[in-house]
Length: 154
Image (tube, rainbow, N blue to C red; front, side):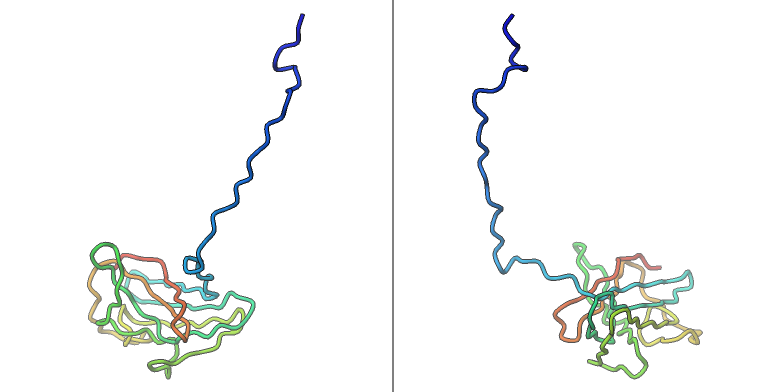
């Protein structure tokens, strides 16, 4: 009885064609992930707590002003100019920066969703309009940005 085809050795093993991976143009190369993480907590009273931390092995130069962006038409986000800048240091001011060593973290709290309401001692606060928002931290040179998760408010 002749052997079945499954038991017979093949006469010839087909050669595989080697296909190189597609070239990625230099302008399309992805940006390296920023070494900075941004986390936010907003409680049921509208109090905001922000944390910007350096999770890299080296130091990171970050802008002390964290901005709040509001979702606009089409799902894009734009800076919510009316809600101010959330400064991570009391004497920060516009354009102020800090060098964060590896593992360093900056934390600050606000009485509500307005950058000018630092701390928890504010009893009155004009609430932000309802909608979807996200916080954004940037490097000092503005070349990299770390976007927080989008969230619904209130």
